[in-house]
Image (cartoon, rainbow, N blue to C red):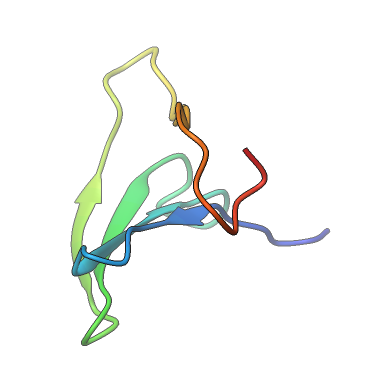
Length: 64
């Protein structure tokens, strides 16, 4: 089984948002400090909800 994740951030942000697909934090989102690479917070979607992040504008270097 391949272990994959989605990570997103912005060049002006100190944080990266990473979806977790396996392990004890499955279906949660880690907020990672890009300078220290430490997990600052783990977010849990509301019951019955799931993570969906929609990119609504094109940025250079992205697929959309």
